[in-house]
Length: 243
Image 1 (cartoon, rainbow, N blue to C red):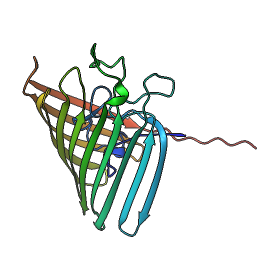
Image 2 (image 1 turned 30 degrees about the vertical axis):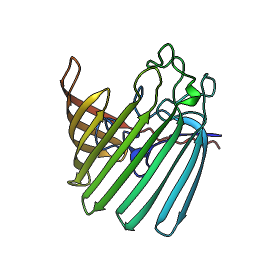
Image 3 (image 1 turned 90 degrees about the vertical axis):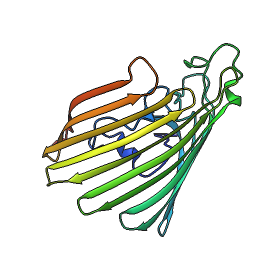
Image 4 (image 1 turned 30 degrees about the horizontal axis):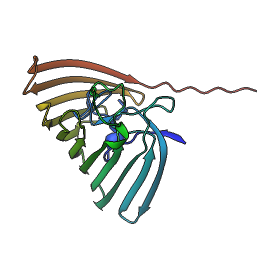
């Protein structure tokens, strides 16, 4: 067994969870900690990776769903499958597909209502398409996704999501980036998010981001949200020796 993150695609979102690699401060709208189609919390499982020529692929089996990660010591753990494959058209240009499938609910889940059927009989599924392109000082990445989270006591939740992210390196120390994303769900309505940032690297261990994010929601008490953020990222490196 080992700890790993199960994601509905395999191109770049592993970098999104590392603040030193994520060019912006926030994550795409369909990712988060709680009650999102994909959590950025890890799950326990096993993974097989394979490559041949310009093709790459992977298959994972985990103890719970990426929509609701469960620890090895929690109840309502159900096996989940996830997999993905990609093809590198030429250096810097790759297209990929991916999916996950398996039960996701637990009996303490916020949307597990009285009268709901056994969680093991409600498999969720996610499908994803991703594209990445890099050339010179530019990096462009994008995703389209479709999620189905079934219920019996309430209507099945369906959501589509997508985003495009651009990054432009201005100099070895400076870059700018932006991400435009959306989600559309049958119960949650529509949401749009535009985020942009400028970042400076004082040295190879530190990164400072100056970020603005605008979010618009079609339903709810707060239809528009504006966020200004400064994020400081650093890493510690040390060594010890003994004669």
